[in-house]
Length: 571
Image (cartoon, rainbow, N blue to C red; front, side, top):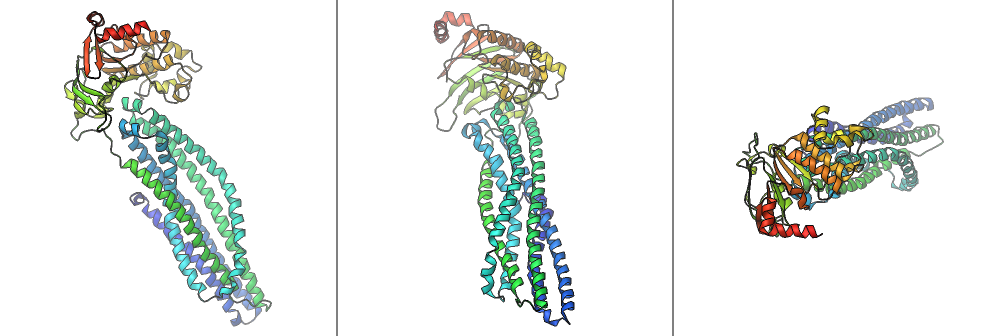
C-alpha cells in the first residue's frame, strides 16, 4: 500500500471514475425501461417519439460521461501503475547496487533481470487494473442482478449470439495494439542491456565507487521506457473507448429503434431492450474477474520475487559510526586474517599476517587457489574477513566508510571489464568530471594514447559491448589509464598480465611500473617474470604466508618460491 501513497489523489479519482462507469452502465437499462413502460402514457405517436428522443439524448449524454471516465481510467490509471512500477524498478536497481559480492556469487544475473523487468511489469498491471476492476465488477454485478430480478429470463438465449461478435472485435483491435507493445518490448530490452552491463561489471563499479553514476545512467533508460509506456497506454485508452462506445451506441440504436416501432404499434416487446443491456452488464464482471485473477497471480508472484531482493540486506555496509578515510599514506596490515566464502565451508585463508609499508611494491605469488585474489578482495571490503583484521594506515577497514575506502584503492583486474560506449566514457568512469586533457595525460602514462589515436574516431570511438572491438592488451591498458585518472594511493594488480602475449605484456608492464611509482602496490601474477623487481615477494600457501623476500634472495633460499620458479622455467 505504501507504493500507492504518493498517488492517493489519482487512485481516488480512478476509483471514482470507475464508479461513474458502473453507474452509467446501470442507468442505461433503467432509462430504456422507463421508455418502454411509459409509451402508453403519451398523447399520441408524435409525442411518444419526442419523449423517446428526449430520453435518448439523455442516454447519449450518459454515454459521453462514461466515455470520458473510461478514457481517464484507462490512461491515467495505467500511468499510475507505470509510475509505481517505475519507482519500484528504480528502488530495486539502487538496492542491487548496494548488495555485496556474496549476493552475486549466489544469484544468476538472468534471474535478477527477470525480476527487474518482467516481474515488475506484472506488478504495474496489477496496481492499475486491480482497484478499478474490483469496483466496477462489484457494482455492475449487484446492480444488474437487481434489475434482472424482475425481467423475463427466457429472453437470455436471444442475446447469447452477440458474444462471438465481441470476441471478433477484441481480436481485431488487439492485433493493432501489438505494434505499440513491440515498441515497449524493444525499450525494455535496452533496460535489460543497461542492467546486465552494470551488474556484470559490478566489481568495477564498486572498485571505483561509481554506484551513483550507474544509478544515474539507469534512470535515463528507465525514464525513456516510462515515456513509451505512457504513449502506449494512451493508444490503448482510445482503443478501449472506441470499443466501449461502439457497443453502447449499437445498444442505444436498438433501444431507440425498437421503442419507435413499439410506439407505432409494429412491435410489442416491452422489456427486451432493457434485458439486453442488463445481460451485457452482468457478463462484464465475469470477464473482469477472470482478468483480475490472472493479473493477481502474475502481479502478486512478481511482487513477492521483487520483495525477496529488496529485503535482502547487504553483507557489507558502513558501520553506524563509520568515519571517512582521510589522506592515505598507504600502509596496509593483515592481522591473522581468515576467510571462508560460506559458513561451515572450507577456509580459503588461514591466519594470514602481512605488513606492507607505504609506497612498497609487493608481489603475491603461489599456487592457484591459495587465496591471493581473495586476500586482495578483503582490502576494499568486497568480502568481509571471517577472522582477524585488515587495516589501512592503522585503521580497521570496517571502521571507515566504503566510499572513502574504495576511493583510495585502484584495481586492475585480470578479467578486464569495459562498458559499452566510447573510449572517453570508459576512461572517465572513475572520474566523470575529468577534463579531456587529464584523460589524455592518463592514457599517455598508460601507453594507450598512441593506439587510441589510431582508432577510427580516436577517444570518441565506440568500443562495443565489453570492449569487443579492442585487443586484450588494449583493454588492459585502458583499465590502467582509468586507474591513472583515479590516482589512488593504493593499487591492486590482480593477475593483470597473465593472459597477454609477450609484446602486449611488455607494454602493460611498462604502464604498470609507471603507475606503481610512489604508491603502495599489490601485484598478483602467475608469470614470475613480471615481479622480479618487486620490493618484496610474498609466497602464499594453504597455511598462509610461507616465504617472503626479494627475488634473488628467495632463489638463493631454494624454498617454495624457487621451486615455483623452476617449474615455470621448465614449461
